[in-house]
Image (cartoon, rainbow, N blue to C red):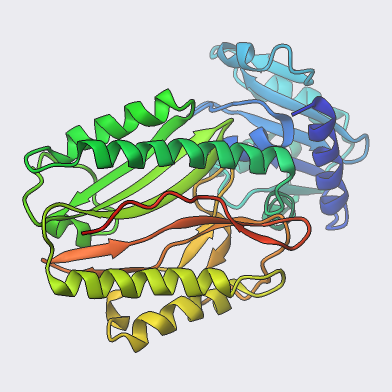
Length: 363
């Protein structure tokens, strides 16, 4: 992605927050700094932020000296500080060119200490949230972003193929996770969350891989995320070992129908809550409504969970350029669970596309 793309993002962001009356914006979270500048900054407990002055339209990244190597060569304006110096001096230097900032914008999940530090430098000011401006930009992916998500999804599907090759009685969840991790890495992506949930563990949606050995007639839910160029893919498939009982096939087919009907209902402009209701109706009519215990999906991009949300309380329309999951599930505690997850993009032309295509054989 070229420098001009990040310049355009910054301009669009500044236009949006200027309309809110913001005079100085403090972007602190690594994911939004990445989105606006292309730099991969994670300062942990140290101060790190992109300061944007609206009166002169200048943006400056303030980072610890030890992180300077991450931004050199990117064409960014930046200032550094050492641990002994602290960040106050570079903040004063940047804000002195902004005039008297009386309205300062922060992300709602920015560290509270950043607010306190800016108050100690600037004195009193009105603080405003800038989240909506960032979300409105990030929710619409360009072709480069969608291409990166596609690459992540393709690598995840290689992970599923590795599951089919390695899934057998006696292998542990942890070992299977290792095989998946290697397959995703070999496919050129970065493995992230790898959830292998076997037997009764498959009924626990966020179960982490354990030393449990897979047994005959087990249901195994495998939920994988990976990134390519920092953009996430997120897929889930349900596998079986040996012969599973009849109720499993009933549940699996019901979840697959909910998955398919929800996707068929997607189009430019429908709300996330409507799509959630379509999937939920299928499962409720099938007699398992109380066992569908999470939302139907969520947006993916630089974060694995971001807007739009496919949930009952998300009344916003799904815009062109948005990418999100559809992942209905049924969880029967102490027995088994089924979850099936695909990644969907609404193209700039309004065409809905399922990015993934690989499905394992189910006994």
